[in-house]
Length: 298
Image (cartoon, rainbow, N blue to C red; front, side, top):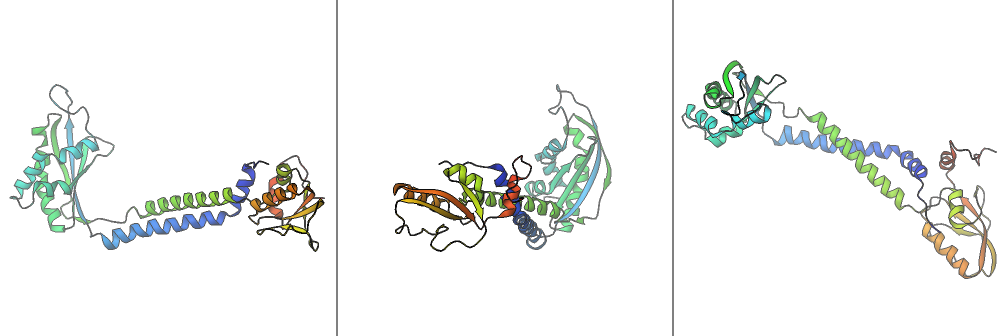
């Protein structure tokens, strides 16, 4: 009496409730996307940013320099160096500390590694403009300290800071939330199906218990032994033979096992089982694409 996991039955039941997965994705998208929007647009203060565009001439020599390449990561290291932030602070007469300035600077390198974008971002528009103006000569002098960079030419400076679009990743947040919600719904639905011990397919019941089984669509005879969610009264059943009516989808697998065990102890043979309340769509789907005849197409 062993349970057999049937992947086809599992998938049929899983995707029959496909709307649950869609609802999970929708809820996840709303929660994550909405939370992101609230944080960025309501809680977080607006940010102002300006950009310095520079062109650099590179020369790599391991004997005289520390870098063998220059990319986004190394430029972010460079703009965070103490001598960079100290010089910018000095240009501002110490109005902002080196640590404050370091927190405002970031760098990006596009596909052409000879071009670098240095960004200054803060919550204060005037502060952003001040720091950017003080940063320009320091970036121009980078070649004096790093032999890998032979020369730096400032190509463009956005002198008027622009307001940053805080919620520019809103769509990504919604997509991430939808994916997480879908996975959560998929996991929850899968656990529910795996924990469900209901009887759905007559053939599987017959293979498990060795009892001839067929579907039943009619009125159950009075006094018949019905196996549903509750334990039936077996007091009136003596030795001999009997038939059972198993309610499909009633989460009654353990009830069925217990009753069949009790009947066996009392030397009562179950000659036939009838699966009532059967989900015809599930049985049809289970047999679809197989060489076995459809039991409902007679």
